[in-house]
Image (cartoon, rainbow, N blue to C red; front, top):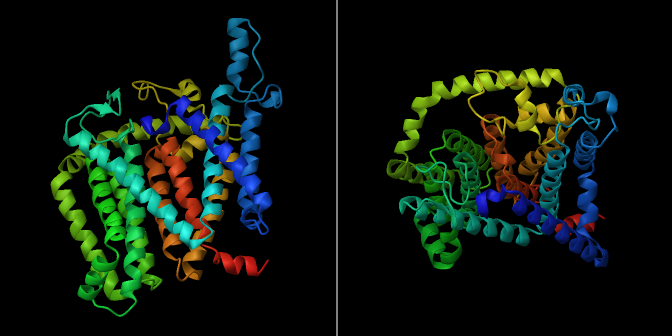
Length: 442
């Protein structure tokens, strides 16, 4: 909860908790006659293989003398300059490298647990509802403290982004991605509830009456989730966050339409209703967001300078990298007058940072592992019928996070990265056949 889990004691405790749950889950699976982990493990063999290569390489970067011939030049310079002995490491900071590996393994663990839990469609529905409620709580808190002029993040004094909504996060862009995930999940739950009335042949008026009579409690959860997350997203004043979320929603609506998951007439009314809602929220809280586009040229200038210096660093160590999680330490070697005005803890481009820290080959393997998972989700949109909303949601959040990663580092904040892994695990599990069909084939 504090700072999007982006402080050591929070992510360390969270990592320990996830490891503990995995151990308990593994013990329970041993007692199952037909454990889901056996089937899902087989399906994940290729993503797990490439992910394992990345973890192995990251560990190698932080291990003394394992690849002494490829050590980072900074260690040799330090020996000559300080006349002291230093370890032969690829990583410029082994502690930060192993810390980053721990967070990445935690993301994989969350994906694994979410996928196993959500093989059954009823549990997938529960997972989706859980996150929609959670995102609503975070957004409600953020809107409350923002409109109330309370410059605090829970019990801590708020120092940065005093005029922007950040909820329990520090950075507005990171929370914008989280709110975007909440908005897409809320929309998916809304579609899931209204679909059974839409396909029954009822018109819009009849369907609305039935929903209000039979689904009052469940119906208002996604509606309030959409309204509150959209408001919070706009009040972050994050340009990339808003645009990437709209792109993700656009992809979701497109696949709802082409896959005939809901009737065409309902798709039109749904699109109109969402557009009206977004327009109303934008008129109420989107003025400052529009003003931020006036700074586009200035931001483009510093990003161009930053990215060019990062590329110089990548060319210096294209295969070995400077050590996973060590961007801030490694980039100091490539700072110039155009970028020296700030301390760069992140590259503001996840893909460039991966190449800078892991090397090009390991970065490719990590992206390939995710790509294989996403490919199955796309296939699930085509193949599934009743549970199609989950892979559609999965593709939408991939578009949101994938696009935003070009401009920012939101997915590197644990709360965002772990939430993305959770939702991706649910979507991936539901992109395959239903549980009883799976086990009947085994």
